[in-house]
Image 1 (tube, rainbow, N blue to C red):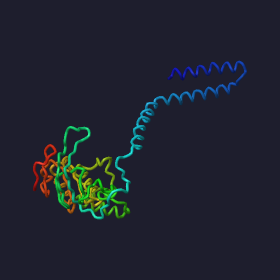
Image 2 (spheres, rainbow, N blue to C red):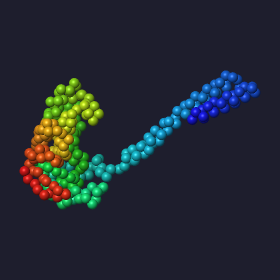
Image 3 (cartoon, rainbow, N blue to C red):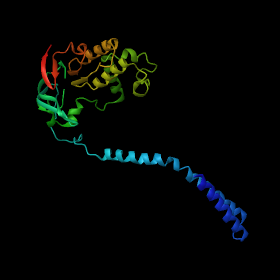
Image 4 (cartoon, rainbow, N blue to C red):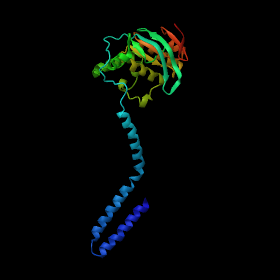
Length: 273
């Protein structure tokens, strides 16, 4: 790079001196030309270190645009399908067989039949199910998602809902101790909070829309005994009057469930209180 820079300067001085000797250019014009050449050469030389970043950015952009342009198999804006006027939360699985695409030879669920009554707490879940007697594949997707998400409400109503969800999740006790309460910045991914605090915030986020169905997947697996006890109390309060499905390996998590389903190799081997 420096060889090119200095060679360019040397050529400019040599040719400029010739123009001055032959009377074709003045000294001022030659100096102006040399300065323009020098500055442009330095500017171009500073581009080369960033060429790799530009190449990496272009490669990443190709993947991003491919993802943006990909058409989803499920259309979230479709108007097709049934809309339930009132969802109670009765879930039923009938003859479910499930395998992961990456492991087609391993059967995760094999001819699974299971019922989840309304407002009961049970242990398990999958997607080929019926909701209140209607196959969820026949339901309007927007209507179905509205049962598990927070609708667009005013900021005042939203804040009231958030406070109520935090109270049920047993989170307001520590939120009130924060310098700015609910408006406190807790860092990226909440790294300024403890594991138990983050779990209770996650529970509050799950129930803020007052869903009829609550799915808890290993909700206390990463917690110690003390934090687990507090989070479990929050889960018990959040599960009231909701169909709650709990996936867990700890007996302490499911000891109060209305029905405990034990599975081995995709098959139910035992169930009961």
